[in-house]
Length: 174
Picture 1 (cartoon, rainbow, N blue to C red):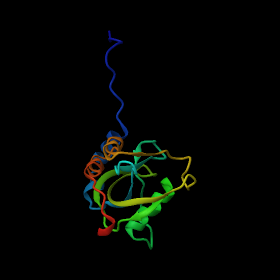
Picture 2: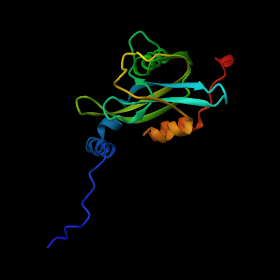
Picture 3: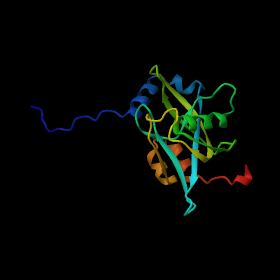
Picture 4: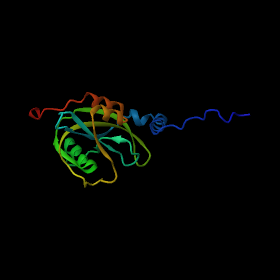
């Protein structure tokens, strides 16, 4: 007779399911076909303390915490694409640094169910404008948090490292 109080197996997380699917088709990971994306690391300084805050937003599908991210855009340089994503996803604009402050990898579940390994270049944006009405308003939440809190909220381990180690660039060095 089975013990009705015996532990039931835990349901795999989304990350575990993605890894299981990718493990079943390793050619997707090792065929050299990484997809490129661009992140916007949107920052501002607290006037009273000069402390850095980072903007985190929720994803539209799962509601997990992310920073604005998008695919390459025809006719746009990578830093410009990141700036457009920041405006559309979070309603912020600012001075964007042309050189990435970091790079990380992650597994992206595509709309068709496939899993694609992605390389993401991260571009710093010193925010100068914040709007309440923007393209994806109502589809996302946005919070300004410390770099450590931003690192706690995001899921990607390599992005966590970038956030914790982040030092804003001086405007004079752009």
